[in-house]
Amino acid sequence: MQKLEYPIRKYTALARQLEERGERVIYLNIGDPLKYDFSTPRELIEEAYRAMLEGHNYYASSDGLRELREAIAVKEKVWNGVNIRPSDVLVTSGVSEAINALFAALVDEGDEVLLPDPSYPLYINFSDFYGARKVFYAAREEEGWVPDVDDIRKKISPRTKMIVVNNPHNPTGAVYPAKVIKEILDVAAEYKVPVVSDEIYDALTFEGEFKSTAALASKDNVVIGLNGFSKTFLVTGWRLGYAYFLGPEEEISQIKAGVLNFLMTRLSAVTPLQVAIARFATRRPDFLEEVKRKMDERRRFASKRLNEIEGLSLPSAPKGAFYAFPRLELQVDDEEFARRLLVEEKVLVAYGSGFGPAGTGHIRLVYLPPIDELEEAFTRIERLTKRLKAS
Image (cartoon, rainbow, N blue to C red):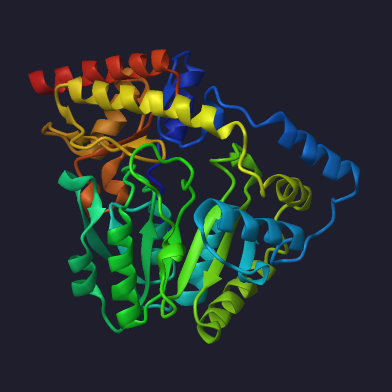
């Protein structure tokens, strides 16, 4: 357990101590729209309440309620053009649990996993936890953090157990072109390596076009799609996600069985919330366009404002999700910068080196707060960068 470090929440306890002393901390570290001025749709809350009143308060099956798995299959077809059967879907307690279960099922000590660099920290953590060797493949910052497919090809080995794709990307906000995804799939098929595609931000694309990995896969690919409801349905605390499995039956059945074995040890995801989501998930939420409009306005503001701060640089604006990953152009360690920003200016961000080698010298922040709060945060950040440049 001592190997595990989660940069997004590492300094939260220090932030709370500052608040207890009367300081006002601006939190830009956690990607939770509900911590700002976004709200869970009332209709969805009423569905959850109705499910509880109807008596759906029992243990569900470990693979998830059938009606939810059916709704997820419809959602993936309508939203992303992915054809899956309900039996190929497993419901999880958020994508976080799905990642854990996949590593448990696929990775033995000494195996290798190909991760994007930078990468969402859970992929780094579970590689360490299960004794796998992390092999980072390059993404080009100057080209909007798009993966370098040639680097993936060079780094595949007989011990590679998965290629992780995260699109739209956390922490950079990159949206991958369909051509790049197809090239990754071609390499994966050639070497018979599963592609794990984390698409939790699929509906939050502001520039470019999101294309699901599974929709572009050939009959020779094994694709494990990871997705959920936290971000697009605004139910982060409900902890409902899913994994689906696409590919030759003899291959995906073994992986799926391993993941299900893991899920059985925790019994089930929360039953009444599964019922509520099942009744809601087959239709694209009416509120989503307004959510995207607000996020896009803040994305544009944050991208412009970050580039105005001397000592920070954002070469390419994020195109999806709700994160910015600016580069520090200062003679300071990125974790030390994040710590000083919290202590001296009461703004909490995540330090980039926690996201992998390419994250060194960066910070990750969310642009979810209202613009006036973002401006206050950027003013505080600018005060620190000016002091650091002057010292």
